[in-house]
Length: 93
Image 1 (cartoon, one colour):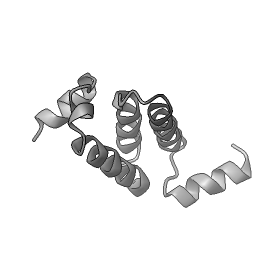
Image 2: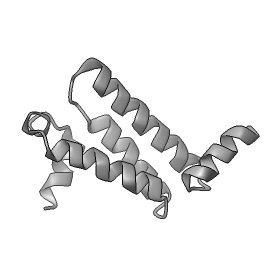
Image 3: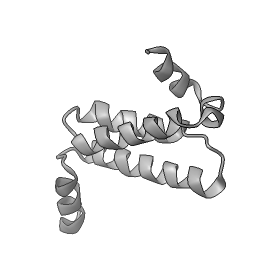
Image 4: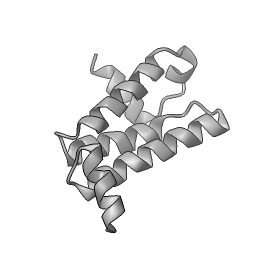
């Protein structure tokens, strides 16, 4: 990993390359959802959950998950279009 990317990863709050990569994939998937208007957040949620599992102390991943789930909870249209991973999340409550 180049020094600049390593510095960005450390600034994000993790030493785990895998967790940081998963966070970036989650952000990219979220941007795809915004761009295409599909409201299908399943892939973004899967990636953010991977980041949280790969580094349980990765606070930026927890914050990103909170914002994603908050966005999902505020839209009944989105809620009806969840993937299996999203359905499993909501069944916990």
